[in-house]
Length: 400
Image (cartoon, rainbow, N blue to C red; front, top):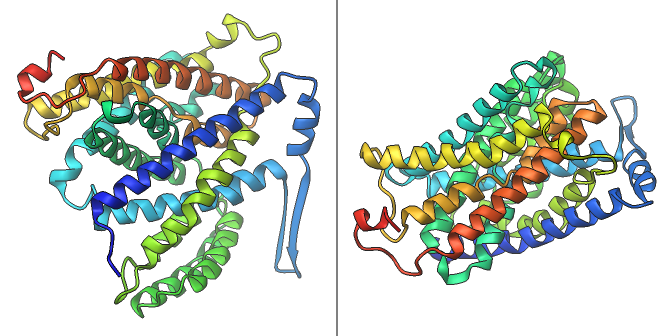
């Protein structure tokens, strides 16, 4: 059996992410239409439907449907993210510092600057400061979906760079969730989580390529992490780290990634978007968007990402810390920095962790949707007028 090359796998992955972005946009649009129609009450009641799971006296989980989506289904999304991160570290864009340096600097700039802008705008609103990480996120599916609409006008190297930046951004989001959005930990449950983790480590060391044992232990780990107070979705990332990259002729990590990706792209993420993007604009005017929480998020995504990502790339290039691909111009990079301001999925997710007040959550949704839309329009406008071919001289590219 002929194994696909890294380039072929990258093209397949980008193609899948792009199509998933279209499904995500459609689900978000449907949610917005329903939330601004007479069906709003039905929509909210549906998401508040209580759903419980019990297994004897040992396990009892009782949550509204919305939290089952955000804690349960999204654990599979984070599992896929974990698989992607591991693949990129082992065989992809992050396997060497030479390849990873530019997206690392860009991702760090794209996380730090938006957070600083958010904090500056909300400095006098202490109740809002827990949302500092919301504008630090980038949505892979949305951004790559829009890039796909530009076809050959956008070099593949730019898509690969955006993918690497978004994956590093996801790593940062995972660390932020673990460190800053975890409280009231149950140490006994957390200690029990070591049992399935140790079991998966043993499977990995034994070279077990079958994926069912990893899923079963991963489900046990999810329950333990949920009960511990640490956000349950992190169990998906931990489980992914134990899946072997290759065992003899078997490639379980790649097989799982390919099998799970369509389910995440076309079912899980659209369900998440439908459940979380519905915000009513009834009575909301310009003053609602200019409120500190909404404005901080929107400004962080639009202005912060542009300054952070593009500025980090410029500094890294000028100080020779990293090299920009020769077929990528400065205009391409600026457009990419704008598209990085599309924070939809992870931004809404972090917003749900940061706040419980309905008014604040609506403000988060408004800020995320507005900031992401503006970023998408600016990014697409910039890239649509970018040169089709590579610019041979870096100095010439800088003026493109």
